[in-house]
Amino acid sequence: MRVIIILIISFCLFFNILSQNNKIKYPEIPENIISRSERMNYICVHFWDNTEFEDENILNDITGFKDFIYLLTHVPDSVAKIGVTNLLIRCMDNNAALSRVDDILKQYFDNSLSIYKDEEMYVMILREMLKLPLNEYYKVRAQFRIEMAMKNRVGDIASNLSFVYNNKTCQLYDISSPYILLYFNSSECHECKEAKRKLEKSERIRNVLSSGMLKVLSIDIIGNKPEQKELAGWINGFDVNYLLDEELLYFIQTVPTFYLLDKNKRVLLKDVSVDKIISYIDSVRNL
Image (tube, rainbow, N blue to C red; front, side, top):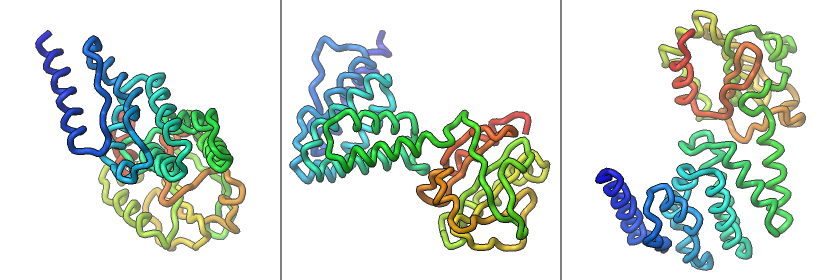
């Protein structure tokens, strides 16, 4: 009982401190709500009740938004949905606020470098946007983003694709390997070079590549021919005539973009960081 009380007090103090340092005024929790989970649920649902989005300081208070993002990831999905809907309703008549909120939610939940990346959460947010009387621009964009998010989801069989390798047209489905790391990149991209360098430095990745348990299919999406020298287990191909972009088989928002597939081409990881790929490979016992 003492531990529970300490947790509740700590949680309350946490939000009291934040409310003093941020522009956002946090909701007061009714005294009859005692459990930590119920208090978090209440704050998530009523987080924006005292917020006036006409104040530009609110829109620039990224710390306040971070607190809300944290809550969304620590409450039940049904509660997160209400919290998101309430946020969208409060800012939907203010175009600057809606644009800012839209950008922040995408930055946290649809960014491979974000610790909060969560496609399920982001699709839920987009679907809630479609239910509201937002202007057509946001509805069209939300619908497009949903359609793109539905492509090659974790658990789905990845779409086949063509690429050029050694002056021949090849296909993803022709590659046989227990695991395939699909790596979309550009030779002109600094972040891609850093990602590749990190993969090359990983002893675990090098060992799995050398054993033949993993192959890396690297595809330059703008059609630049890759360097001739290949590392063990790497297939350096390139796209031709921007077919990947035209056919939208994969929605590549930025490079580098990674997908990890199993031997059946089923998606295990989608649009994740190199660190998450290495962590996943480390967790697989039979590799």
